[in-house]
Amino acid sequence: MDYTDIRKLAIEFSGLSGMDDTYTFYYDETNNSRKFRITEKDFNSSKDEDFVIGGLVYEGENRQFSLDKLFQSFKLQSNVKEIKRQHIAPGKTFLECVKSPKLQLLLKWIIENEVYVHFMAMNNLYFGIVDIIDSLVDDTKFSMLPPDYINLMKNTLYKYINADIDYIHSVFLKYNYPNIQSDNVQPFCEDFIAWIENINVENEQEDFGLESVRQLLKASQKKENLCFLSNNEDLILMDGYESLYIEPIYMFPYSQHIFDEEVEIINKLKAFPISIDNQILRNYVFVKSESNQWIQLSDVIIGLLGKLFLYANSKSNSEIINETIRLNDMQRENISLLKSLIEKSERKCLAFIHFTANFYEIEKVKIILSMK
Image 1: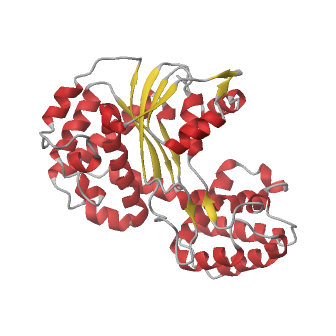
Image 2: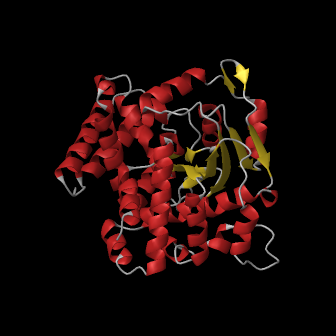
């Protein structure tokens, strides 16, 4: 597939620069459930775990770094053949991970050596429910609403769906969401209208957002179908992450992309080559992580970010504030270093940092990274 026009639109829409520069990207991923689907009682993986792909990136090609010296400084046991997140930042939670002196060594080394972080984070539940709003506004006068208004509806709907997930899960099961048949459009809309009418909203802005959704649902009850919620596979909210592998390849066509080996993605790229200006791109390779130190370091960073986003998704603002007040000096230093690295990377290239997430998650991430 040729991505020339898609790339051009993305650059113009997001005001990106430096996309023709030469970088060397390394990738690993975390929370790769392959698909995110609704099961009889829950989901096949935690709704609070974002899929994250990315790692480390530096400007140019074939730059020399003292990686062996860095690895020696970790003082790991001799039987460790491949570094993983748990070797450098052990712990089940983000706050446990940032207690590690080894993590401090790594973050300082990355910053001092002009290396950057890049990542794409996908909130599966948010991705799975935004099609509700897109379907309600499609082919109506509301499709011309400002993006901020559309995003307000999406984010407010996500917040209250997430807060009442047990009930919404039952509605999704009832209608085989996101594959709603034409004779179920009206009852699906009615169930959501009744649910919204019983919500106690927290502020006027959210009240406005939810009331807008309610009015759109009322106007959509007579539709034959909800365009983005039909002709889909029953109960599959996300059927694969290959687009997140493909996007950086065509967005940075003059850069090199080195991925951790992923057979399913390799096969898809063989079947559907990526082109720019009708020229097939060959700017990527897949390698075994045990043979590549950069991918091992990317595993550490992406694993840490996965823990960060899980912490943000599973805690309230007040819980985060209360817990971060009690951090020790090492935790504070590591969080400060992580924040500096992300900000430095975003200044280098806006496209290095890419969220498909909701306002509330991003707000909580900012609270965590900005603690004093």
